[in-house]
Image (cartoon, rainbow, N blue to C red; front, side):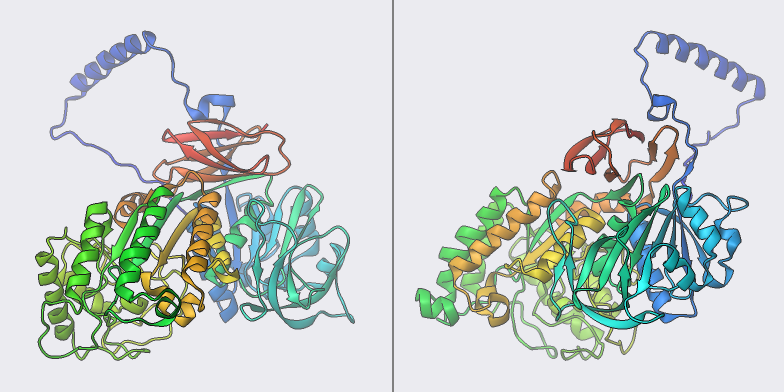
Length: 615
């Protein structure tokens, strides 16, 4: 299967046909006027005219897959999505068709990299043609551990023991070099496991990431070979969304120069706000602070957290839930279960000017599926409960909600339909980015816990804007998730709950001073990763996201170390350069942030096209 991206053009046609003579005369007259006007103003240089740039070819990658293998199918799906988000053009070929002809320039185009996403692909490689491709400047990228004894021995990879490599289930991730700015990639042995080869590289290889156990086994390694490079992922982990950022960076950093489009956006969301509170003294708050939950929220949490977030430049969206009952049948009353407290906190939020989304009439997930929580008895019951929510929404004179955060991050097609009927204004679903497809629905499609950015497949008028991280503590998993979001999308989308201190798992039993200090550290951390990012709410991000999805930016290779970028509906890009002493010269845009001097920049386009010239 070959995937080709096409730029679209819109044409405006006149309502009436002009005669040929009249049209010719009109064109001549307009040409004269345009010429006279052009002579009276300074000439504007288009990006592609600068440096004498003529696009030589589209930057294109060859993705080699094997649909017969489950591991390859999963790997390929994830790599496709990562590359599509990043505006990386690619062709796809099955392993059965992958022969020596795929390496040759005719009739195939030149590929900037050949990406092996199938274990069987290594066995099909012709040593002579592979070596020739890499020596002359190509990039061979192994995205799923694969073995060709003759080739790997030639380029300096050999089994640690015996004549063939031993399969090892490695655990843990430890980067040997920084992956973004000065940050390392770290995951404990309980959080990560993958199958790889127990191999020993020659001194020509650089180990980027290794397993924690066994520490002698490389997970990601690369080397130069002639004028090209070879990247080897010694693992079967690139089917996981958590590794998209590392995949993209290990691919693009291995090219002489490259670019990928990103969102450059930070979102901050607060679920269960106003929170559940019933006047009791419980947990750390009651035992150490001597406060009721009412008192804690009113005098501590809302006095400290939202003001700090706003001072950091973040725009907040609160997702209130009206009551926390288990009711899913009968008639639903339009009241909250903590009326006075709810109104007090809601009034604070309104006065602050923060956006208000919807978290449900009650905290019951909208689905008819078989899942971890009891399903609703019918779609009608869901609509009846949501209608009570509509009455409350109108009672408190709130603006029509645009964003919905599903309780427990669960909602199926029936729930989305009920939500859209009750709240026609609804446009965004804010769930999790990382999740599993492990719940079946009784009457519709399976429930996905993990969403992609974009139009919802069940209800197309809804946009999915998934959260990438959550909580107050920057532990290894949270940090890895944040870095993955930044490296994949140039995006942070984080959420917290005001009541986390009352939860033993989410609050870790720590006191408020430690929790708030940890949150402050985390916020400063992810803002430092994207210091010039747009701070938005989901409803504000919906507009640029739609534009982003409408058009894939074209990235072409020009003469004299130049990239040509076309299409500014994806205006922000990470720009990579390898061993370049100075920042690139840009026409039609500008660098808004130097991430790693000489290596990585954040760029914004100002014109419909831009050229990036690497000195």
